[in-house]
Length: 334
Image (cartoon, rainbow, N blue to C red; front, side, top):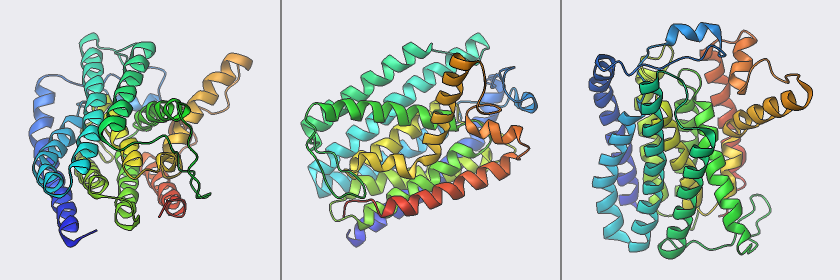
């Protein structure tokens, strides 16, 4: 990448970080005054009850901050460099915003009903699939998307034809929901996603065919997550809610498509995968055998039940993500 692209990256990251911190200082008291507090399920860890009432929908802070950075640095950078870059960039960011809208709607329903469930699972799934399909169609028409799927570590890109879209939809919806599941304790989703964003930033600068959109999106992801952690790290003064976790999920999986390595997100996002897999295994085994594999699912709750502190879980899961990022680096197409 050229020097000016590095400058765009740094400005985007710094701008998003500062705006997120400033927005949170305003947003937290506002959410408290509106009684926009988190409802804690009785089936969760009993010590989480003390968190009930903590403001949620905090994802609005980095959503707004990232959008400002995108509409300033991103617009200037992309439209002065390459139209195809601009198309890929804004199609991907719009996809993440649509997932955020589902989260905003879902969080609003939870608060209004004073419950920890907004949409039903089928409703949320259908909306998420629809967004994934729209994203892929737009990327096919204007973003240069092909049906060749790069296989990490093997260096091959078979043309899957229509099956590419089936795999892509499942991947998008799966990662978005996995990031959502990861947001279960203070600072976990934001910490893990900071590392994931760092990986995609490095990938953006070292992959020959990578371009400016992936660098800018990774910059705002890093800046937004670090800014949010200033208030979300244990003990959290605000939660991101589905508003933030679905938005981050859309950006993370979008980054994998921007660097044309969709499957690499399963490697660098191993924590997301483990969270989702533990939940599926727990439910499946209980329905079949009436026995539990984990003390509680998703897996971060299992470690809580084993006596791990929230800070230890965040540190260990983040370290695992760093290791996964190093492993993923060797699976990139360069």
